[in-house]
Image (cartoon, rainbow, N blue to C red; front, side, top):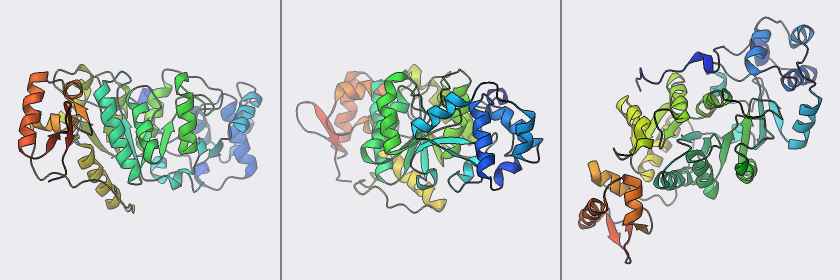
Length: 374
């Protein structure tokens, strides 16, 4: 995907390569020193700068004193049940270590990260339409059932829908912009626990760290860095999801963007991504197959979605593609209107046309579903 629009701003995170000292086996003492420095207020970028100048972790410890007393954060780490993962550990994903500004250490709670690959990121607007959230849940559930772990940022809107859909059938990973012991927003505390029990929580900030504005662009580079591809479902021009897409482009990841109605302001960023060459998402089943093929091309072995119907052998475009993508089980015309932005009369005309082609049928009571005849 070529892009001159979505360029990553280095001031969001910084730009560095993994310090060599972290790629070599670390002693228990060195690991403890790094955790102590992190919990004492030494952030990722400063820690990397210091390590680049040092021959050993011990040298860094001699130069630096934690800004804060690390004791409380270390206690929170122990209580949270989280662990630290370093680049020299088998669990640390190799493709994450290869990105620009790789995290020098991760806090992880849940399953080992190397057991959760491959991952696909699904991101989008915090203030999304109901139809976009429903579409996201369907896509995430399909991917998770096929053995793909869905990764997102635990935010409101599309992120939450991605986690919820994935957890209905499989695994999910949430990358945090806070400490590993903090759910943000607070109403996602239960969702955070669900993710930790059926996947993993991941972050680079010390326990007890609250949300800061710059944390979230920094988090987004990890979301895309863990994934083989990023799917943007709905995003305005100022959405953080576009930052994730920008990181994905720089990291050489595939970017997918969900089709959206022209009148939908929450889809303006998605339309820009499509103009810049993102791969089009119309139907969750078709996209699941594309992503599974991508995973298999990278060497992953997956069984595939057991109940995924074959993609219809028709070429849909325009309003027909919008409406067909909006129809699931027991979908009303009002729901189609909400998803596509079409008028009720136009949506009804297109549904009737799709019914004539054998692609959808009316189950009665004004509720539509796809057929399996093609």
